[in-house]
Image 1 (cartoon, rainbow, N blue to C red):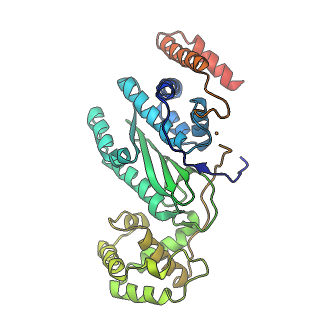
Image 2 (image 1 turned 180 degrees about the vertical axis):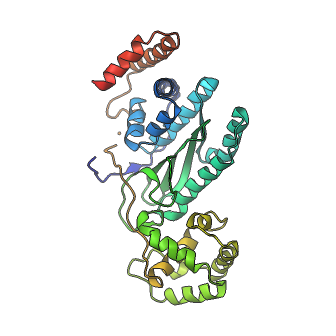
Image 3 (image 1 turned 45 degrees about the vertical axis):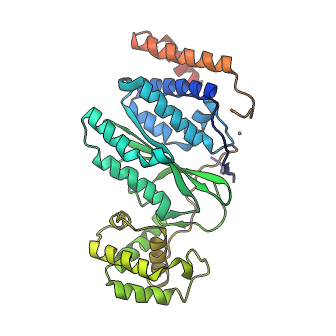
Length: 353
């Protein structure tokens, strides 16, 4: 698709109850049909697609010019699938603010309910959040994290970051695929272009820098600190880190932790507790100036929309039509379960048209 520069503005307020209730019914009905027709993984594949997700939110009647589309659609999905309970073998975990912090508990709860080991999924959830917060330094801090998975261990992530200064949001989407490397352009999409410097340590272009950083932390902490003191005197023109960002005592402590952990792979180093934005920025500076392996500064954003729903744009939600749509979808799935696929087939023909 053709990319157009745009933003996802932060809007205050909440979805009115009359709209949210309809959204819950609508998104759960659509989800049920997709799972019934194509299976759980197909739903993950679609929900992780930025264009499909945006269209899904628009069809549900939310603002297409708002950061709230992400959080409200995910909230409606979570509520809707909880109501369907055992009928849909898909788990929706996490959410906005405090709910995001409860994601591991949510995953564990589903693991106990389904009788499956979910420790690897908890680790994936945590790593996806850390990568978008630490390796992708684009000025956005995560405040929303939704982790979706199936009984087979397939997963998708929808998370969103906020930039307080510009009052904009940015959405990050992931999907589990065979051979996925979480540090090599792992996203299915990042939505919302921006201007300014972006340090992208999760890019394929950053692979030489990743290798250099991993090699550097093999040195003893004293040597590493001496090297850092030297390179901060010869900063590159693009200042993605400043001298004020380097707290020598704290940095030495975390470099010692990394050195003693002896990480064999880049993702192991990223996964060490305490490794944050400033540590990774300092190490990337070393990779650029000492190892001559500059990191990537390419914005990973692949999708942008001319975004506007509940606030009347592009037109007010027609409640009667919305209710009729929900009723049609529910009837279609109910009849299909009884062997009558006339309405399901009509939907299929409509999608082909």
